Each structure stands twice: as C-alpha cells, then as structure tokens.
Image 1: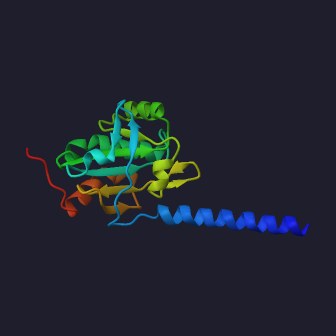
Image 2: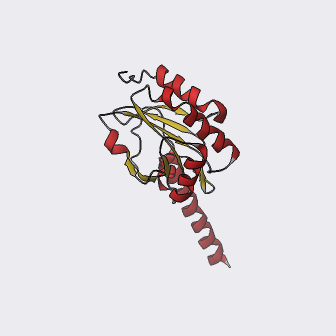
Image 3: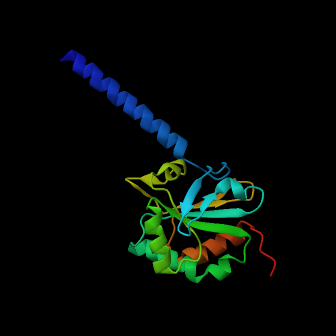
Length: 179
C-alpha cells in the first residue's frame, strides 16, 4: 500500500513538471522569435515560415474549427476584405488543427482567397501556445520581416477581424506594396 502511494505521488509530480514545462515553453510574447512551421494548406501547397524571413511580414490567425459560426464569420471577413489587407507587404494565413481536406472545403465554402493552414497533430499550435482540448484558441500572431513576434491579438473579434488586422498592420508600420 505504501509503495502504491509513493509511486502515485511520483507519477503525479512527473506529470505536473511535464505540463509546467510545456506551458512555460508555449507562452510566447512580443519580441520572441516566432516558432518555425511547415504546414500544408487548403491550396495544396506547403508553407514554411522560414521562407518569409528577411522578405515579408506574416500574419498567422489561429481559429478553433472549420465550419463553426465564429470561424466562418472570421474567414469571410478576411476574404471579403482581402484587397485591403493585400495593400500591405504581408502574407496572411488562417490556421487550425483541422485536416487539410476539411480546411480546403472550408476555404471553398467561405470564398477564402488566402491559404488556410492545417496542423492536425497540434504540434505547431502547441509551439504557439494556442493548443487546448484538441483545437486552437482564436489568437492572431503578427510576425515581422525578421521573424520576430511584433503583436499578439488574444481578443480576436470574428466579425471585425479584417478591419482589426488592417488597423494592426498600420499601427505596426508594416510596409505597403507599391500600387
């Protein structure tokens, strides 16, 4: 009986320390280098954050689940305002833990004219600190041309996500494309 108690306590301590390490690693803040990723997208391509370093800013908008109400509103907001977002020298993506096939259907359904990235095992979502209970939290990361996080929006409003993204890009001084 005593051995069972010691073994149980040891297992609980190991689990607690492991979780602490995961959460400590996952808490990103402005000024941190953005975790690299290589993710398949709704358009059939694979996107690597490293490919943009030194070339272009990136916006990574995590969303919980394709075909849910808030996510649909957010995706449509970005799709309907894509011309305004693309005035900036930025590549922008939405990302979820949905399979790539589901995100491809979702992109078609919402008219998304930008890639939806798929992280089905949640590895990248975990690195960004947004993975919880099998899906991603609705957070948007603004990554500068050097690959450094310049802003994190943890209070994304789906209905105004495009307008908020544009305002943040302006506030961060992201360069505009030549007309």
